Amino acid sequence: MAVIKSKLFVDRTNEIAKIDPRMWGSFTEHLGRSIYEGIYQPDHPTADKDGFRQDVINAVNQLNVPLIRYPGGNFVSAYNWEDGIGPKDQRPTRLDLAWSTIEPNQFGVHEFVKWCQNVNAEPDMAVNLGTRGIDAARNLVEYCNFPKGTYWSDLRRKNGAEEPFNIKVWSLGNEMDGDWQIGHKTASEYGRLAHETAKAMKIVDPSIELVASGSSLRTMPTFGSWEETILDHVYDDVDYLSLHQYYGNEANDLQGFLGKSVDFDGFINDVVAVCDAVKARKHSKKTINLSMDEWNVWYHSHAQDDAQAKWQHAPHLLEDHYNFEDALLVGSLAITLMKHADRVKIGCLAQLVNVIAPIMTETDGGVWFQSIFYPFMQVSQFGQGIALTPRQEVDTYHSADYDVPYTDSMMVYNPDTQEVVVFVENKASEAMDYEVHVDNMQLGQLVEATQFCGYDIKQTNENQEMKIQPLTNVKVDGNLVQSKLQPLSWNMIRVSVKND
Ligand code: AHR
Image (tube, rainbow, N blue to C red; front, side, top):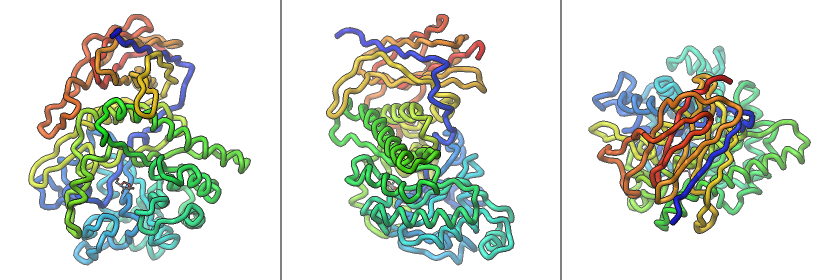
């Protein structure tokens, strides 16, 4: 077989957009061990006076997540936020209907906001539009964001937070298109409720930003019409429309699995098209942006979860152990998000700790990083700045559903650090000659080059063997960058820029 080659062409004057740092957010839900035994475990040796595990805080800080969505997820659709405030010994224990578990409410809005401060993230607070609605949502905004002198704001102060939390981003429900959702609604029912709820929330605090709940998956039968109908109701109220997407490799088809980035790209394009069609029909000047507020691989734990006994507290649910091919897909989905930096402003890798997560905890031990931790850590740290339009010259392969380019690649120019960063994934099972041709900017020196490769595609990382390694064969010659990429590899190349 001939050596595979891939070329990336970028031009400094051809920008997609500045990447919103919130693209690299994450999500934590009252689900399994995400909160309890994940971020909150008062009897853990590393717990601080608030019960927060310091080993988890340190791990999350390495991931550099600027925004965290909470408290669900499916959980939020039957949640009473008032259960999670006030003295902990007086908080009720409830049935959580979303996951058939026991919820002791020892962690609520105060704990979440304080924990976010420990990891330098802003909250994205979801409100319950399943069993509840306008009243609970507007009270929660008043509780969190109103300074003082009213029932809910003074209750917050009594509960220990003199200053308002000033939560900016709010999600209007979760996956209301899915019949698994408690309080599932038709698009018209949800659209009406979301509109009236948004109206009340914005009267309490006009500075907040709102996310409408879009489709749970691209394959939902209502996909497309759901977006169109709900946007008819909420177009003027909201700033973002959400998308959720998880992929699995049940068919054990590596090339098909890695090709899911093409599906992800098409999903984003479709949602942008619907948003803009509604914009045109409404003669609106406003553009709705996207919040990809759940994305990841999720399938390894399904059988184990089906066998779990009901009504436990903090059971091991959705504890996927990710392997190397999962890390490759997460890397290429991250590149896809950067290609849509003009419209995707918020992203949440779902989730953060223990539940389909990059970070795992041992109840009586420490933390360990999953394979997917590594590419995500690199994009969250270095996928910052201006995304430049990528033009690739590379062969494609045909997977079950798509023609898939053998590489996904992308260059970002960061004016703050005066460097460009190339992310490139080689999806071929053989080495590849790779070139980047840059126009209208002067490249300087190689700053750093790394690769993540060489593992069996089914290898997981419980023993913490996986590492980002140096990529040693990179040459920068004028405005040409050349390298040889290892088979099935995730790579990052940082090069300084002479001037702008
Ligand atoms: O992240 C796990 C679940 O996936 C969330 O609760 C739900 O929103 C989605 O279906």
